Length: 214
Image (cartoon, one colour):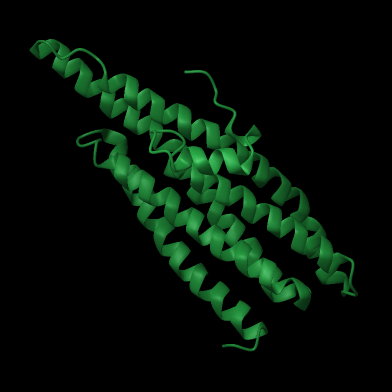
């Protein structure tokens, strides 16, 4: 399968293809699109805040996250296709012959390995989404009041990215029974979920507090 170049698609084309019922793009690709949108909203919010009077600490903090947001956005865009290609490898493994015991054993091993590789893009999305959520919390605390709605969408999208990435990881893990790396991946995913829940609650507290709706 050639790289689909989903980041180059129009929003309309991507959404319509997602709704077609074909295997690709799927949920993992959608998660990464959400991550790219969250980082774009973060960049927007930081830039608008810097155009308004801020103290030196705020200015330095807002300026510091700009290149980080840009790099994260680029990574999320790359992960859209990476997730699609990883899923395609699963499809190819499932198409392997299973005419005799040897072929069935080889096919099962290939499928498990393909699912292990398919864990990596959504795992990266979850890890990066958690970082974006932290940046959103900083913007919610230090950003201009005029960008709080954008920051709110940024943060809740980032939280959805973490959980969206994790459900894909956990789903893949169900096909990796007995593989050595499965338990390590599960442990990491559970820790990420706990961190996301804690940071999500703190983000909501700060955001709604500044909006006068604690």
